[in-house]
Image 1 (cartoon, one colour):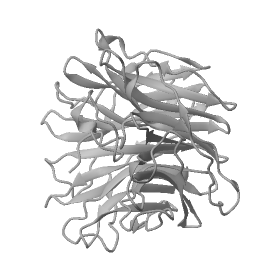
Image 2 (cartoon, rainbow, N blue to C red):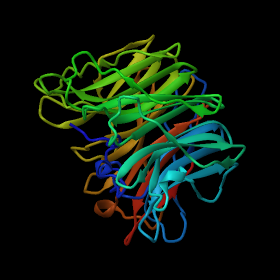
Image 3 (tube, rainbow, N blue to C red):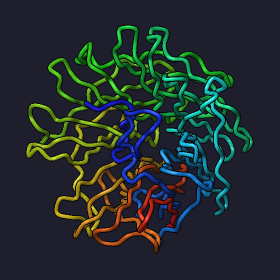
Length: 435
């Protein structure tokens, strides 16, 4: 069973909390902006990218990572993530691209009780319009981990506020916010994980009303969930006010690993339900994991993740919701042309357009060695393309190439940004490319 914060395979080593070790594959995450051809049509053409270029973070930044991306309108996107400063403390940051230009990195001000050592990271971001966003993440107070949300208004970021866990939280509970979604200014939802007063790891969601955050409430696990084993929420999407979808993982009473989906409608959260494994899933334990969910409209969503098949291999999967009903999960077999015989493709993030097309970002193994960043497009009910993101000129090649795409966000009309990382001869760096 996964630990909290294990939402995206390959994420960076996390000094803030031991449970986020695999969230970034190569420690540094970058950004790739692209235009999706044919947005607004029934089908979306394959995406073509130029070569990526490097991006900068503040001098002395170490182990940086972009963990989330949001694009409210064409040409405007904001990233959220973290980096370690020269003092060794981790900092939550956001980075915005508008009209083709990148603004300077903004280090978010954490809640006042984070002092004197404000370690933190921004795990998710959602923007309602350009200059109006909410970033959610975690920070430390002594040995405890707490959740926070920070708001941007008219391009200015305010100090973050603590998100209170449900009233049944243990006094020693750590809080992990894994997702934030906004459907209007001052109308947002955050979701994540906490421990109840019996020490059991549970899932929760909190809403914002008129600019103030209410205390989070527990979300009910699937009926077949073990009453004592952890339940982990990994991603959140809200296609309309009062309508949200959250996905995650849990163990049933025989301790088999499954994925779940929890749905909110008319502002009310319903009990989470098990997602059906693919037909070729390992019969005794599919080890299902979902890392990201995205929606085009209410009742039309896609979740991406992985499972173990009947041959005992960990392989990628996607699950579609259509008309409010979630179909059986399916094995995703499409890979880039230069993929290895065993590509080990891993999804990290997904985003959808209003026309029903969706994109997913991740990484895979390249033939001859090394790893590559990949963006996939789904249209007409199937994955129609898998495109490698070419690294900047100073990146490694062949067996020395190490790159990954871990966050993607799209505007309703089809302007998208995908976050990735690449390795040079001496360090990992941020990168950006347009398509």
